[in-house]
Length: 466
Image 1 (tube, rainbow, N blue to C red):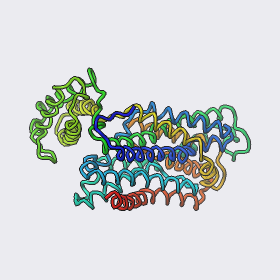
Image 2: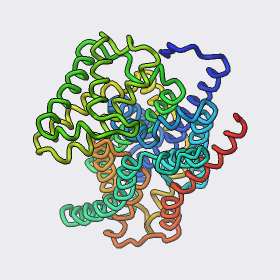
Image 3: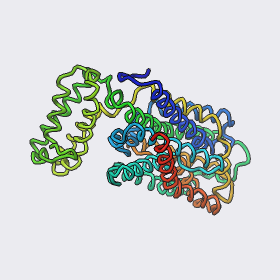
């Protein structure tokens, strides 16, 4: 299961195991923290017994991680330049990893204890940003080197817009249901089991939200584990050593396609220099030379695996600027070739996906009660109705599912809570200011709090590992 080509001492192996255990603990906490959002409406509306709902959600979360791809995971990895992690030295790298993991777990468990639907996504991303910035500052590299700001801007926009989208769509969907559905029971506070067809919708959307949660939040755990493995064992995990035959030839073909397209459409771009001073032409030539000599990626010398990863990432980064001067057809060709080229770096071993899926699925089985009450009774001034529950879950399922497809990390907590708030406004039930303020405060504070917590933990651990 584990692939170690490099010699690793017993002490370092224990430290690696600790990092992985804390990462799985984060995903376990994510399960019992965020899954309450997936089962809250189906339990509160008496559509399913709690035990059955939680088991269903756990199974669909597992399936979501396993079948949801790794595009969100790669977005998480790109937030923190892994070059910074490795170049900082073993002790700083270890301190960074443990600090961001511990900060994420502490904040997740703390907000769960107080019944606040805070975001695991904000927590993890804040922790990553915190250690990246503080490490760059203490090592004199500057803020610009600590974070991949291009990737961070995309992630930040997704986290900012998704709750607003959830609120608006939840309001519109309930408004439409009031006019399309005449059954008054759908719009009254829950008193008994819902009509059969509504129960089916609620159970189906619970399953959908759970699968979407696994495909989005589960991928964040996969990205976190890959960040650990790439940072601490670059010779083993910097590139996909299982890539052979057709897969490797596709990467070679992609490099040739990029070179050919630029020669035809924007030849001057090949003279652009990267951060190391090499031109794009030189990076493409070096990458083509490295890949031409091997029949499988595993044949690369240990010292060359990290170099190949850096070449791929540098070429990918430089293509962002080069593509701006290409025709739409040429830019599309470059985009597809770049995705194909990055198959050598954008991957996750099966054992990582399975372990994260298990941690999230098992975590789903516990701890859901605290947040179910908040979601069902404390957002609006009246209890949740069947129509509100179904509307909110449809919004959450579609929004999170679309985000996973686009490779954007979003918060299940904030999307669903915002959708419920939107249905409360459309229902003219009013909002409980105290709860909404608490959720809003958690939304605003989670990112900076996680950044500060991870930064302080990094400074402490850096001193200990010294």
